[in-house]
Image 1 (tube, rainbow, N blue to C red):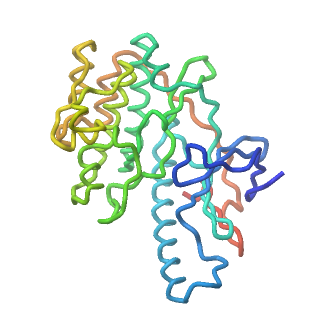
Image 2: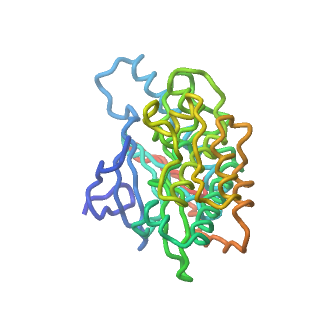
Image 3: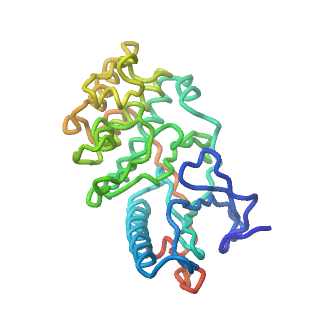
Length: 318
């Protein structure tokens, strides 16, 4: 069976629904893990073709990639209490970078399945997602690609359903935003107006309020099964419409308090949007079950080691 580092793969890595990576599942110490290989960054471990100047440029790019990823994963692991999935390891083998995290036994749920639930259950799930995003924002981490595909639902030990936030590939810290000219990868339906303008070449502040707009679009889908309303003759995506100055329309079928909350989350001005903590508190009108903590192995005495082919960083090092 093929191995990646200390993980025995259950099948070859795939590019299906992967974006800028390939992924699969592996097993280590009797536990199952999700493993992702980044394909946009290659370390010049065996580069015998490039000039010394080109190799030095690649090394500088890799150093920045490593620094940013380690800072992101440190923020996740330090602040998440379970609703944002923690990173198990970030490592390099030869020229390839990988991350691993515990495999989530998720339900086959998207927004159509969530929108069919009783209203109180939808509200509860939205509050759990807001709670998870608030934990990330405590570390000033912007997810930047919140959308239904990046929220998994799973049964807990008490047969409740909880939400898990995944896929931080587009994430960055407020203190270290993308440089001018760098792209933000995501879905324009969930892009905030400021994120859309950034992709169009405008320099604009990028803050945690980007994620609040994305949550507003998602929650509207969870509550109604539909995107917020916008002029589809003028725009193809909800985020694009907001960036052009349109006010997204919230469904009149929603209760007044939810309609008012979503309208503020979808405000074109990020300063007028609530924080994730405020969203959580407004949705939390009854007791929210504490998220189940994710089990972790105790830090190993050899949790970091460097060799010619392997470089590992475990949660104990973050």
